[in-house]
Image 1 (spheres, rainbow, N blue to C red):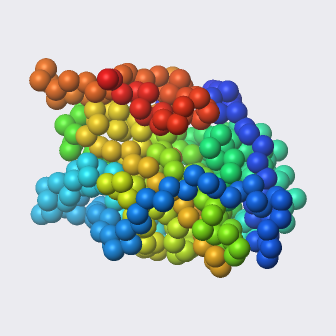
Image 2 (cartoon, rainbow, N blue to C red):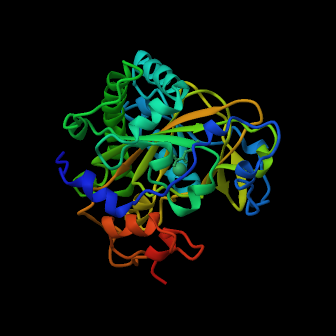
Amino acid sequence: MEVPKSTETRWSRVAPSLPVRNVQDLACPEGLTEETLRYIRLDIQEDEVLAEQYSEVPVIDLGKLFNPNFAEEESARLRFACEDWGFFRLVNHGIPEEIIASIRTDIERFFKLPLEVKSDYSQLPGDLQGYGQSFVVSESQTLDWSDMFVIIAHPAQARDMKYWPVQPHTFRKSIEDYSSELMKTTHSIVTVIAKTLNIDLELIGDKYVCQYLRMNYYPPCMTMAEKVLGFSPHSDGSFLTLLLEVNSVEGLQIKRRNAWVPVKPNPNALLVNVGDFLEIMSNGKYKSIEHRVRINTKQERLTLSAFYVPSLDGLVSPVTGGAEEKALYKTVGVEEYSKLYMSNKLDGKRALDHAKLL
Ligand SMILES: O=C(O)CCC(=O)C(=O)O
Ligand SMILES: [Fe+2]
């Protein structure tokens, strides 16, 4: 897969950084201060939370997708998951346990480093790479009760990176190992997705060339957990996203039939979701679903999201099944769409709504 060299610098124009406070450093105050009060959200949707649907997120077994005895049935389940939920749990994903264990440990260690050390990482060259305050966030995220560290980790691009974080000292290896394993897993899923949509794999080939790893840290908040959000409601501006729950503290909720469904962490699985570009390409058959993160009163939540994004030069068009199926989306330029996604010019709508044909 070709990865355009210019991607890194162009991203800084697509997604300029907004200054945000380091939330972990606010140190879960016992009382409210002026600084923490600004995180109180008046817009937390009071939609129903359906805790009883907790365990219903579809589970897909990657092994079965490639086992001739089960492939047909499992692919049908995958199709249902993408159509009806936009999310699924991936079990039997094939990533060696040691690799997952190392990345988990290193992410935990990373967020425990003193603020000065982590902040140094925000000065690293490479635009889409940085920690906390100086890093790219969209306008709606400036009030999020969380910190993040993002790194471009597509193996081909990562090799060109000259400066890697040196603490924890195994960080680079953990990231590289996880990243390349995950790339293989993603390729397998995409192969099946292409089949279920009856789309030539070649047509999808350039839709998941860039992999961005984003480590999320959601500090607990004793005094006002109910009033803050770790991550504002959003759908992902990716083709596909694969989430690893670094620890098992809950918080993620997904929108389903106008209610929020909490997702129970599963240490042995990944959580996969359809992103905006896949919704467009599937002409709306597969859904890029809104999700958000709530905050815990006592425990920190740690996750690692991997976003698979098309090359900035590319275009994404809806693929229709023939003359009788009308296109419901415009063809979008990836760069232009990403700019819109990151901007605050969405008038309360999602970027995806701008891609829909009326
Ligand atoms: O941390 C989570 O559970 C969700 C993160 C997420 O939605 C994202 O990174 O886009
Ligand atoms: Fe997300």
